[in-house]
Image 1: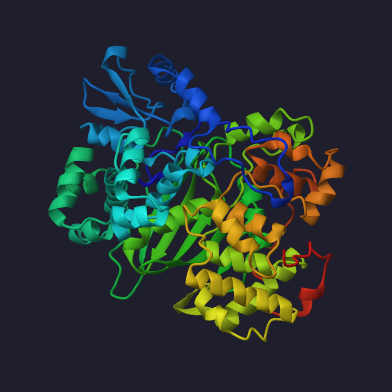
Image 2: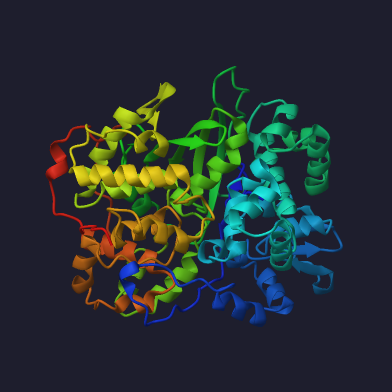
Length: 584
C-alpha cells in the first residue's frame, strides 16, 4: 500500500498512536542522535499489551481518527476492511477482526471499503521512529525497492537473509514483503486509473505489475471491481459533504516524450502547521531546482526530482480545504513507473506521516516547550526529497547563513546540474549527482579550499557507497560514516540525520539558532533529555521561537511572484557563522 495518496476522494484527517520511548537520559547530546535502537519502541509494546481487541472496537465505535493506519477493521459479514474512522454503520463486535496492515487484511481475503478508502490512509508514524529491521524495511518498501529489486534486493540492503526479512515482516504486520508491495502497487494502479487517461495496459506496467493478468486479478480481488469499472467510478464519490473538494479533471494520456501528469491528495493526520512548512522550504529554495509561487496562505511549492526511471516535477499547494486532512499535489513524471517513489519522497519532504498528537503530548508536558507547542500545533520536521542532495547542501551550509547556503547551492546547480529536457517554469535542472561532483574542481564556488575538499570527499563517499543515505538506511552507521569524513562534524552529521534520514529524535546543540533560543525560552543546556524521542520537532520549535512569535503571515509579493535567489557570490559572506566542523 502506498500510504497517504488519496486519488481526489476522501479527505483524510487521521491519527497515530505512538508517544515513543524514553531514551537514556545520561547520553552525551553532542552527537545529536536518536536512541531508538531497540527492536520495538517501548510505547508501542505498552500499547500492544493495553490495547486489546475490545479497546480497538471501542476506537471503531467512536470513529477515532487517531488510529487510522494503526490497525484495520475487517468485517466478516461483508468481507470488507475499513479504517477505524469509517463513517459506515458500526458492525457487531462478533463480526469484527483486526489486522495490523492493509496487506494483511487483503491476504485474509477482505476487500477495501469503497466508502472510507482504507488504502489511502497516511503511513504509520511508527516507521519513522523505529530503527530496527522492520522499520527500515517498511521505509524501503514504500520507496519501491521491492518493485525494482525484489525481496532479495530488500534483504541485501538490510543485511539480512530473505527468510529473516519475511519472517519479521509477517510476525509484525501479518504480511510478507511481497504482499506489502502488492498492496502498494494496487493502490498506485487505482490512482492512475482514476486520475489519468492512460490505457489500462500501460497502467498495469506503470504501477509495477509484471503482467496484465496479474494486474486484473489483483484489482478484482482488492476492490471487487474490474479495472474498467474502477475507472468509471467517480473519484470524489466518497468526499464528505461540505469538504469543498471537487474531483480532479481526468488527465489526458501524455503525448510521446511528454511527462505524465497526475493529480492527487497527500493525506496527513491531525493538525498540520502548513504555513511553517512552506516558510521553511521557501527560505531554502534553490534557484533552478525549487521555486515558491504565490503569497503566504496560497503558495505553491515546486521542485525537480531525480527518480529511478527518469525525472519528475512535484508541486504542492499550501491551501487546505475547510475539512483539512490533505494537501493537493500534482506530479509530472517522465516515466509513470516512478509514481510511488515520487509520492513517498514528497511525503517525506513535508513530513506527512508524522503523528502530531504523540509529539504534542510529549512536548506540551514540558514547562519550556509547552507554550511553543501550543502556539504551533502540528509543527512538522521537513525531510528531504533527495537525501544525497540534502547532504551536499548541509556541507554548503557550514559557517554561513541560510541565504548564503542557498546562493552557493544555486551556483552548484548552474555549473554542474543536469538540465531538464525543457524548462518547467523556473525549474531548469536536476541537482548534480554525487559522482559528477566527486571529480569536479568546484573552482566556481566562493568557499575555502577546505570546504571544496570536504564536498568532494562527501560526494566520493556517496558515489562509492561508503556513505548510504537511502530510505531505510541504518542511521547509526550512516552517522559514523559521515563523521569519519574530513570536514564533517556533529552539526552537519546531525542535520543530515534529522532531514535526509528522517530521524525524529535529533538535537543540534551546536546550532546557532538553537543556542540562541535555549536561554531565550528559559531552557538549560541539558533540557533536551525531556524531549525524547521527538527532539527534531523540539529543534524546529526552537528555530521558530528564535524567529519570532507565531502570528499572521507577513506581507509578501503579489500572487504569482516566484521566490528565487540570485545566483551570485555576494551574499555568501553575509551573516554570523554556523558552528565550525573540524575533522574529528
